[in-house]
Image (cartoon, rainbow, N blue to C red; front, top):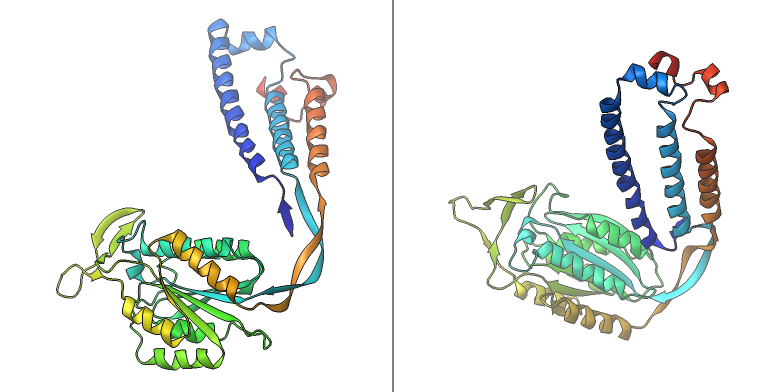
Length: 348
């Protein structure tokens, strides 16, 4: 596993395209000035030892050295040992609604992005809990199994969208049923499921049985509502540009509304609470407090240890390239003229 110490220095890599642009501008300016001074044949006679290709080689060496220096400043570290550590926490699964109704913009920027931000902020406030992610629409899909890798969790979370599941609709019951398969540690008694949704449910009778199965496994279900009671239309966009609004069979614009009643019911049946996601900070604060008040169970987790600095290899490579840049002269040398590596005789 690789760990980066100072990621901020990666912005220095933007210097490379800037230098490349300056070089090209200078190159075109020099060519134009030379053509004004004399034609190509006369220039070759005036400067017979001028190499046509070495300036480009020197540029590549210099830019490569800058890239390696920047990576050295970032100081990448490599984990050399995988060890088992004991932690205390709660197993948390997030079931995120990715149905088309989550595209409604009655809550900025839209319901799905609001829900993803809520989950991300909750993860940021966790200490040693394990998390898993489920995406669901008409069907539930396992997005990320239970893990302590919060970075991976947020990466998978950001990749979620309403096009990831071909079948549309909203089946909360299937999401709950899938969540019951996530908790594989028999000794873990603190199991929490957060359902992030606008409350639309198109499942046929599966919700009651799913809630019963969750209760039997000791899973507490909390629901987070995203959307508004007033509701809003479902935009259909292509490349971020609004094309139309979703319409029903009669041609009327579909207005989707937050259904808090069903979310209240699910939370009540699941021995949890319903929370409004309208205010991100308030919702995250309430959830953090709820999780902190739960009893923590000890579990084992594997993580990389003994990270070793690797910056010296990049600095060494940068120094080597700079030395090569110094010793590579822009004029033709006798031995390279004999080798004619770049067909300069032909070009002349």
